[in-house]
Length: 217
Image (cartoon, rainbow, N blue to C red; front, top):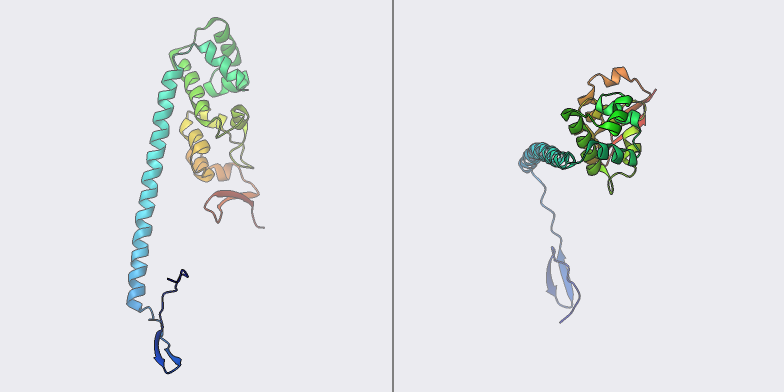
């Protein structure tokens, strides 16, 4: 048996003596009705895909929130002094920790020496470390430095700002989501374009990712 892979034949052949008579078959043209059906089917699939994407995105956000809350509860069992020391070991300055918790640097220093942390502040400390746990290696290296980095060039908005405004969900989205910076900025500050006018613009690249480019003159 011949081991060659045979190509499916779409030509009709008939032997005549020592030669072959080959009858060429024209391909069937796609009718207008068929094109219309295909167009409607593609539109329906696109419509369904849009809602599937939205449902999956919402489910992902909910799972991130659940994990963050669970990790916060676990971190909350540690002493405030231990939480502060671990944040310092990660590279956070007392100034940045104070900013994210909405307190003064002297208050942070007092907590380290003698405690006196309120329940709400202890929860904020635990939630900040829980957030760091989720975005650290292998996702983000040097998490403290990442918190200081602007979300996009030309806009002085950082994860520190997001957390300070009680938007850890946006920090998680920025670190672990599809990283649609424009949506994150709009959710945080709807007027960010007017507030931070820039020579750069956010756009969706050919691969679907959000990128930055200089505006055309």
